Image (cartoon, rainbow, N blue to C red; front, side, top):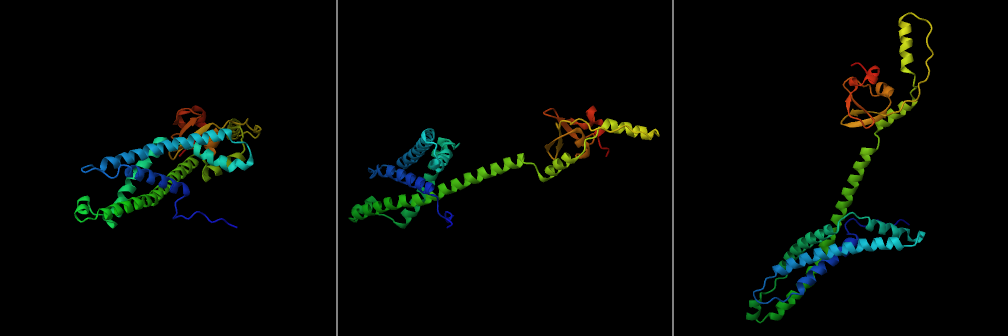
Length: 289
């Protein structure tokens, strides 16, 4: 039986848990200072709640990563604990700093509290304190405030869960791009693979003896020197093509595969780049263009 994948429109449990803790930590901090005295402002209390949420989530992140490291050191080496060990390794190896978790909590709590409060206060208007005393509707005002305090954390939980889910998706997408970029920079291209496979099938005749035979033929000699296979040459030459280094190649492969000219940039090993025409030992391997 195939297990269905997690619905794309539903946040993961970890996102819902973070949203729940953030919302109720924020609203409980504000509610603890309610009701206000006459002339008091709610703004300092809300700012304090935002800062408290940021500090709380930074502390939680430190506790979870430290706890994961501690469990990994004491977890028995049994196959039944492999899945748990994998999850703990993921938590403990997280490179996300503690302060960044707190910063995310601050931003998410700020956005969700402003958005949800605006919606709730617009849908459920409550009479002011002065109107409540004038119209003898103080109990109605208190009931409206209680309804608001019940709806705001629920709305913040739902909204922040989706924001945490988006943050998780964005971090995974960024990590996937970085991994793909690193693989593309290290993996050989199809053109390089074809070149390397062709290079392995090429014979390695001694170019000096080839030149001697050519001179003898030009002079009219009928006997040629036997061409022996040259000793294997170390492939330590690199060619600068299309903004990157290609190689390594032997000197013969520079001539037969890369078709280097006097203006081609080459280097040996980790040396400096220079024109092939400036390297004396590559003079006989240059292609005239």
